[in-house]
Amino acid sequence: MQPDDLHLHLRDGDILKAVVASTARVFRRAVVMPNLKPPITSVKQAIKYRERILSAIPDRINFTPLMMLYLTDHLSKEVIETGYKEGVFFGAKLYPANSTTNSSDGVTDIRKIDSLLETMQSIGMPLLIHGEVTDLDVDVFDREAYFIERTLIPLLSRYPSLKVVLEHITTKEAVEFVENNKGKLGATITPHHLHINRNSMFDGGIRSDFYCLPIAKREKHRIALRKAATSGEPCFFLGTDSAPHLRNFKENSCGCAGIFNAAFALESYLEVFDQENALDKFESFSSIFGAKFYGLPLNSERITIVKSPQLIPNFLEVKQNDKIIERIVHFHAGKILEWSVVSSYSIVQSKL
Ligand SMILES: [Zn+2]
Image 1 (cartoon, protein in one colour):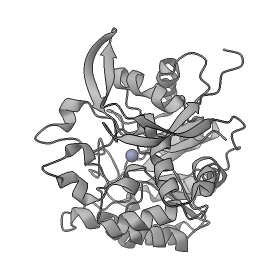
Image 2 (tube, helix red, strand yellow):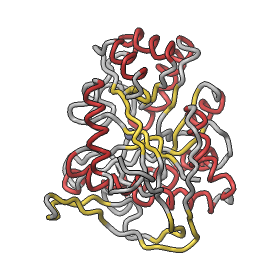
Image 3 (cartoon, protein in one colour):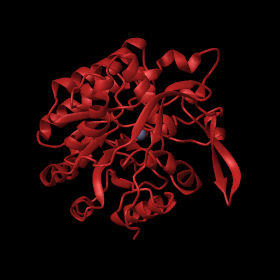
Image 4 (spheres, helix red, strand yellow):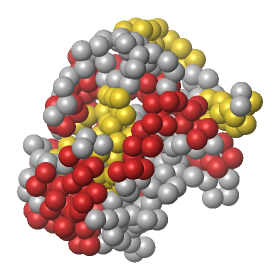
């Protein structure tokens, strides 16, 4: 059945227009991250952003963006209550301040949002977490493991019935922690963290195309993630964290963090499941576990995927008034992937 992408960055403007079809042609729904400039912190902003997303989707593709609220130190409880009850917000995203792209307005101290978390717990609104500490005394490769110790364990004990998803997990420690807390905690796993380890960033020179946050870790962590994704455990599900940046912002003396994997995400995951002899577990990971965790109905539409190799192009073009203005590098650029999606998107029956 058609899968959902439960963690996605679509950006805005020309980039949004360039990338959204990549996701919508394969995924039926996607949880859209709110870290725009400025971030999505009000119901009105979310409604407008959703409209911009829907108007950028090619005609007749049936795709539902699930909107997220960006938590800040000073947000009011009313935004949460109204936005969730009116069906605008699907959940809220916790970015520790300065942890990743456009997170400078994020939460500086988790205790400052106690009343917001209490409200979310009481109304059943999910909390999605970028799980990294930002303390300067912590090594960049250890930030996720420290986050679990310093922030996540106390958080889960303070809010035992809050629905929490630890996003884009990258470590063995996170895999074990999620497994030990399944039921109340879920986790998304990206395709790139299943394919690359930290050496990929330094293969013959600095490879900014493989720089993302949380940063790729040692090989033992990649192996743990591959085991988790293909384990058939319902606490692990698909979230690409596809995060497009224009070429000139990646190839730069201070290049941006993020990997654009949306266009061939499913093929990328399938390669891993095939290599791990776990193709029978793929549909659960991509289409069932996430929806069940969030209480969403399962998609009734189906897509067809075949084992047929394809060459991944280097770039996706970004246009302005039909003129190519920039490019975004695909994950797996110039490589061959063994699988191909052949029939994908569902058609809107009656266009509103
Ligand atoms: Zn993300």
